Amino acid sequence: MNYQVDEKGYYGRFGGAYIPEILHQCVEDLQNTYLKVLESDSFKKEYHSLLRDYVGRPSPLYFAKRLSEKYGCKIFLKREDLNHTGAHKINNTIGQILIARSMGKTRIIAETGAGQHGVATATVCARMNMPCVVYMGKTDVERQRPNVEKMQMLGATVVPVLSGNMTLKDATNEAIRDWCCHPSDTYYVIGSIVGPHPYPDMVARLQSVISEEIKWQLEEKAGRDYPDYLMACVGGGSNAAGTIYHYLNDERVRIVLAEAAGEGIFSGKSAATIHLGREGIIHGARTLVMQNEDGQIEEPYSISAGLDYPGIGPIHANLLETKRAEFFAVNDQEAMDAVFELTRSEGIIPALESAHVLGVLPKIKFKPEDIVVLTVSGRGDKDMETYLSFCGE
Ligand SMILES: *Cc1c(COP(=O)(O)O)cnc(C)c1O
Image (cartoon, rainbow, N blue to C red; front, top):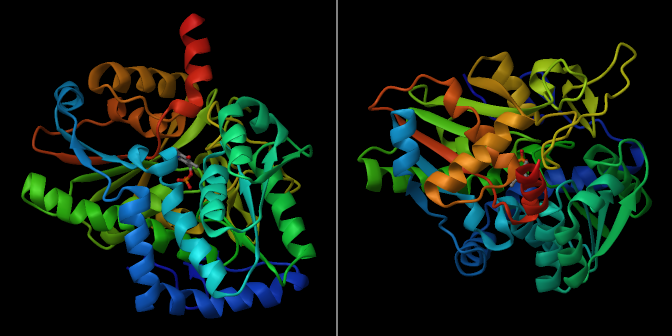
């Protein structure tokens, strides 16, 4: 079984590039360019030197002793929270900005939910001296203040989006609209493994540095280069794709992914796309989409701004279809409990998104010899307001 993208841009039935005519040329240019750039020596050299000296990679693989004792297995945390700008997002934006430059683009746009991708994009734009416009739903602008302030300080223009739920889906629509108006000079830095081909594959490759490091770090720490379980949370699915990339065809490794159930899968306030979604097209890709009978996209909800997206990366839709991965839905309360558990047992305050995969630990029966690698996709600084108000409740 091959779980990677095929030459037409599909993972099984999912993926492809369903785009308006006006974007055909620039999407085709990107399709024809990205692998050449990613595989060139000059790109690899610059990308890896930036990952080391600017991002702070390799990110540690940390043996979480007290968490392991609690769940009766050996839990290693992949610490993407320690990256520059506080999450895995920078692995992707560093790579895409180099691709944009090599294509001669002069203006950068991005969408953001929690603001992590916006900050990561504004950061690399500041470093490359490129103008940057970030679209962000007004709801998210309000609940993720610190990240909005960071983007502005970095010199980016943050545009609050007033349509729909005023969250990530609406910000993405607005970014695509902008791109349609400026296809020749503008590069759209997408923040997850969503959007038309080649974005899902390109972003997965850029995030695959995570599993590349897990291999040698695990060999060093546990004496074998594969775990029994790989675990990650899924919004669009990029930190998860990076975590599993080099293990997809290794059937010894169980893949366990977590999505956001909000107030409960069937509560009407949820972002559990894998559990609720039906096949459809969103933002240029065929995948699972939360939609009503008429094919209208349902508004997703999660306490975590980075997970409330009504679609999912096509690679994950295919992992569900082929049963290669198991998916759990974790609700707001379970995620919040997991935040406090990790904080009080290991002294690590995780991002709310990452807490959703921590919330799966109580749902699995592990064996003492099981080796579990769980990706902590980001740190909790941006979520402090939510955490504190929750304590006070
Ligand atoms: C954006 C974000 C996510 C969700 O995005 P994926 O593409 O699914 O990885 C998860 N965790 C953090 C900390 C994020 O910032």
